[in-house]
Length: 431
Ligand code: SF4
Ligand code: SF4
Image (cartoon, rainbow, N blue to C red):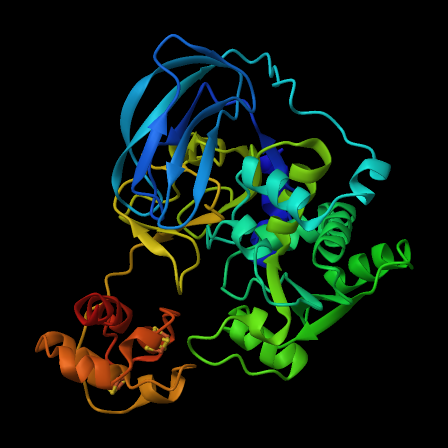
């Protein structure tokens, strides 16, 4: 199947037109005990325990929230092992051997629309918290916390912009699951008693516009509209999306809820739908494995906790006998993966494999390209100098904390300096 679709990928040099294939039967899955947002956890299972899809394996604790960990296959707990997390950290994971029976916990069942129609905001929060829905666009922010806002919300924004090059998971979600997106929006409108929902997509994607227009017509009772926004990066950044779509400028340090707005990624809204309708945790997600270093770039529906190496194998392995660079996420904001024995967690949208074209950094020529490119109005070249000098006062004056790590300054740098790395270091120093 992958070989057949390669021709299309070659022509377009993208995966956006490739239908999603399924890889939902890994031999083992791995569930991280801690993660970037949660440093503490309780584990409820031990080696030898039998589990089903949806079994609660433990609970993680963040600063002000908690997350259940769920099994994404049925089978047996085979131990606690160390694996690489998407952040590049070596963490402990619960290893589960798949029995391929796909037995589900009894708590997973279909609720009627009549029952859901009576839900209060608290009921939605309960379902979403218990099923550990998080920002599936990659943010990993707990969705139930957004639902807990005390600000009155009248507008729901659905982010389908996916502005980084190569990424196509959201594109495929919209093309393949438009009904689920609408159902998720329906629940969000009900929970927040909001007046309006906007689905934001790039202006250039007529295919998305057609699919969404058709599905919106099926729900005349829902106040949902499409907003076709810019084709540029970082249009998908929520501040930029809200500015373009609604003309509202959310200032640094403010939350969109101050303006009566709450945002969800298209994948997250599908996760909300499944959590509410079927009481099911996020057990699968859409994932893209792409780049010129992989034989058959593909969109894949995966079980959460699948080892990346299995997906590389599924896609025909690496292409070409040269060094490769692996990026978890987009090429602008993603993180380098030092090795491929990482685990695909629920916030892994994609991995890009690129043939390593060694780039040599040159000294800064003070051209100011980085300054002109920064969407936050920062001066990356000065931040770089302050970081090198470990000058914390200067870093604070330069407002390094406002950097969104979009990668544009490094991308446009005439001297090929990895400025984003200096921004990250500078932010850490200033903290
Ligand atoms: S990485 Fe930070 S400093 Fe660089 S362009 Fe993006 S926001 Fe500006
Ligand atoms: S873009 Fe690069 S070379 Fe130009 S001022 Fe910024 S750091 Fe220096």
